[in-house]
Each structure stands twice: as structure tokens, then as C-alpha cells.
Length: 209
Image 1 (spheres, rainbow, N blue to C red):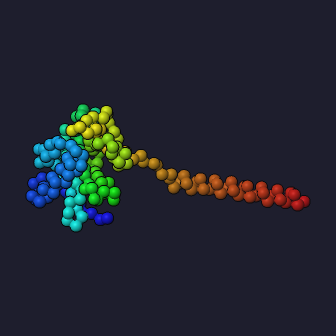
Image 2: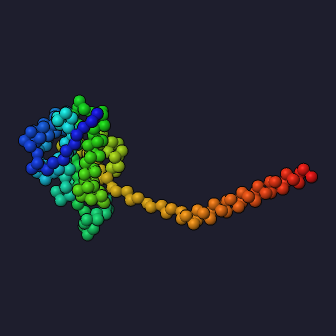
Image 3: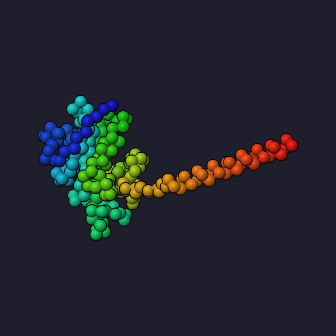
């Protein structure tokens, strides 16, 4: 199935956008999960809102919390190139990830997270880790995206969660064998093959005599 994605600041959201976002969040996090909690918070004002549409209808959503507004921090030692002097560097967070019930099972949640991660790298830098507060039954899903659980499980609004962090894996550069070395190796192998062939022929001649 094909989906369209858009990312907007709070001020860029129309009243219709906001209505459908809040409706979806209430449907999934309050009604489906039977959890009475304060979904609307002041964090929304500072977030980037990623919306997945199909035929112009909202079918999935998440919000991206910029580093300067994110209170969820990693306890592990991480390197933040933009803030190396900080012992506990600020990092972006992704939250309120949802897919409406009738659109689940088609990989949309993975597409939403992939879009959100790519945007975080583009907006906040590729060297910054990303943190989430994941419901524990979704640990395997987030691990498949590269997130690593951190710390103990905890209750948030009566539901078990765990912090998970996506670190940047540094690519190890493999030195390519130089052309000269490759040429020398080829010459040596060719010479050895020639010697073996010559010995084989001499052996045959010896047996024939």
C-alpha cells in the first residue's frame, strides 16, 4: 500500500489536521489501551508532527521532539558532536507513534519510524542518537530498527515502558589492497603455476623413458 507523508510544526497544522491527530491519539492511546491519561500536553507546541495519509485521510502519526525540548535523556555515555562539553547531551525523541487499527499489518509503522529517523538525522545531525519511550511489548519491533533498550522497565500511565536509544554505528573503513600489491601477488602466483606445470611435464617425460 502507498502512503503520503508530511511533517509540520504545530503552527503549520490546520485546525482539521489537529482535530484528526488528537482524534487518532485518543482512539489508540486512550480508548484501545483503556488508559485514561492526559494526552494533550504543552510539548505538542514545540514538536514536529509527522502524518501518514492515504487518500488524504490520516492513517498513522508520530511526533518528533527536538533536542532542546526533550526531557527524556539517555543514561549511557553518548557522543554528541554538537554538544561535546555536556555530560548528558540533549538528543531528539520520537513519540506518540500510532497506526489506526484498520491500517495495521502493512508495514506502515516501520515506514513512519523510518521517515522520522531520517528527518531527525537531516534536522539534528547524523551523529546524534535518538531516544524513545517504548511500550515493552514493542521492544522487538524497535530493536529491528536499531534501537537498544536502556535501563529498567517503568510504568507510564499504568503501562510498562522502557527507554530505547538508537546509536550511530560508525563505519569501519577497510583499506583496499593497492594495485601494485595486487599485481605482485598475481605475478608470484603465475610463476608458481608455471613451475608446477613444468615439474608435472618433467615427471611425465621421466615416466615415459
